[in-house]
Image (cartoon, rainbow, N blue to C red; front, side):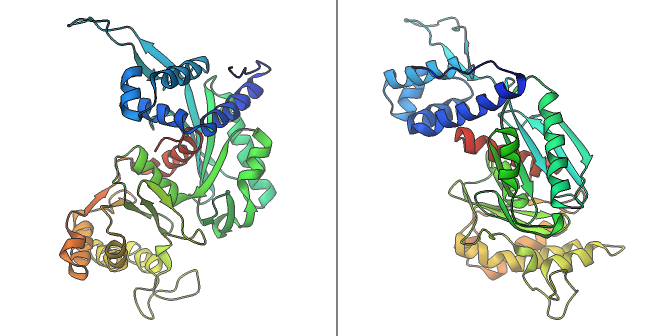
Length: 371
């Protein structure tokens, strides 16, 4: 029995579609297995899905039929057969039919908002002024911008993802978001209650790590280091985001690296964030020194977790060869060869939109289960 999506109004149709799809894929693991097989392959037959997932052909056919009823899949005409038997019909996700709406709130007084397809390709991106003199004004401003983005296209909205600077729990409550003056505020709830669409909120560095994991080909165990207004990290362990016991994993910026060093906004002196900011603010930034400081903080993390990759997301021109070489040298000198061997240090392939794409990846993963 298939679920019927009532055609009420444009807004109601989008909201119902988001909710129905989320419920559908969460109800049974087999549905997510089928979706993941199609997503990862790009184009695949029912028989191949059955072989890859271990599900019966009947189960695969039932799930595929339901996905087609939701208008998620297209079927390609069989290619000309070069052998005996009927050529298989191939299935593909309708990547231009569904979008996630993503927001990057990591830029002071601004928000980057856009719509992104299932494979991380933006349909639209724009940078807008963010009114945030109070929590009420911030929420109203975000609601207006999201509604404009919803209305800008007839494509179905799968979900809304928001990347926020600060500590965010796994329910989308901003525990400590000083940059936006948010403290123990349920931002996810404030947006989800208004739109009745799947909404997911997380720390900006954590979603950036998810973007590189899903769209950028990062290793199953990797760490993304983001240098922007501050310094933060996002951890992916065994293919899943790791938030820590109090949702504050990756807070590298406030590790003290220079005794009695530069004053930091947190009240301490010599924090990594303050030292890097001071170095970048000089007329001739010492990228090698930045690399050594990062390496000193990352060496114990690499040693403990045996990471396969460190991905850098930095303003244009910072991720230089000098920085990367110094970072690798410091980690190499501080860890066992077995730990460092095979470690890759590289710039993200996703450029300056990594937080926006990460917000989209978070919503996509939460609703459909792709990873």
